[in-house]
Length: 336
Image (cartoon, rainbow, N blue to C red):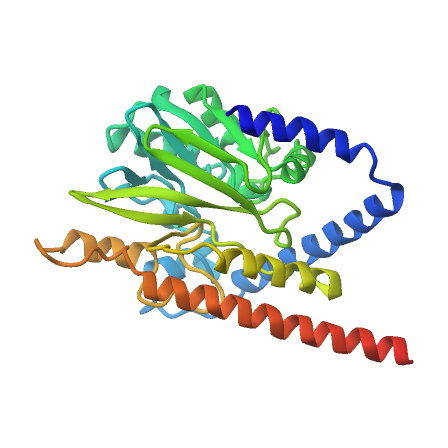
């Protein structure tokens, strides 16, 4: 933990030398990213789905995705040391170690009671949770952090850029909870690119992938146990950059960073179903069903390195294509 705090102090000192122009550019990028995120959310809510579609798709996109009851699902054990405890559309996970546990994401109200109950159902003592890691600064990921911090006493972890986002949500309407004011956790632990968190047998490495939010992150190094086998997992998975040329340039950097992480065998998703067409081979709940019916000697349904590699490669290809398109637009504008 010393490394995280030393890096934080040095980066804060460096930030004092950033000029007004840089802050203006950051504000423009944040506004563009917010607009793109809102448009994507609206598209998901209006998406066409069929009653024959999978649960993870129906609870993530389309009109039923806004229903509260469809989100209330039972927890399940994905690995000997990893439990899914969240609602249907956005995922909370508990990673256990002999020295304490880690909660990844907290969903939002009105689902915090569900998460608390699910944590206890899988046999985890909430007071054993030492860290709550927030993927990014949107309400569906941090909205339960204040209450879950009070329940567990855990440190709350996010990037400094997204701590700023989280704080800005204080008191704003929660669109899944009758527009009640959003409660936010007090700023706690900050992590930056390359910081690591060691707890028990876990050596987690944080990576930033700005775009979806200014401080969006992904985490490599999860050690996931299945009997005598241990698999290497990644949580999050990066993301494309914000709109326009600068965002496209960042998107390529994000994708290159993601592809630099080698040996990923398990993708721990932050949403049950992901745009534009889910996750090949099955989303979280499809794979959970396969896990229930797994026989001795059968492969673990969440262990799927080939699909992960294809996803990472596709993300880099898409990012490079987007960058070429934005460069062409910029060239045409300059010529005019």
